[in-house]
Image (tube, rainbow, N blue to C red; front, side, top):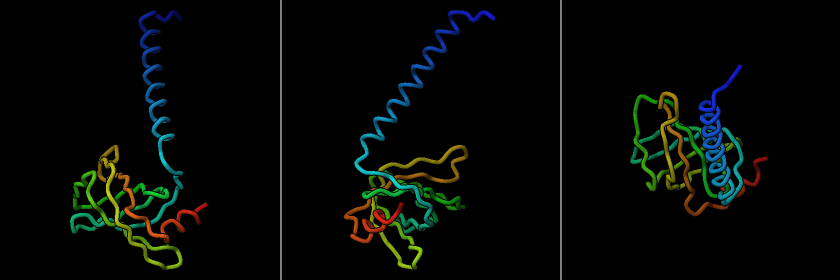
Length: 135
């Protein structure tokens, strides 16, 4: 089977672009200031007096990655806005964190959930203890 030069060139360009994207992602991950730990903790996000069920998907010493649960009520989260995150530890202790939304996007493919990264403002000692206790 003979493959034309045009198709080989298209493949080379696509491979290069894919590699560049991967390279950019690796640089971003290396630029993170702290380790992420994967978790699945039910939480409540309070934004502009609206409550939204969500899950904490990963945690670092400085922030959280959250995914909102599908809801009938649409909330438009805005980066650099304050948000409160509440959750309960397995032993029953309730935690409330004041955070700032750093980034947000509608989760593909249907956009019925929202993914967001939040930075914890002045993480309390309990939050740091929670992070250290996660394996």
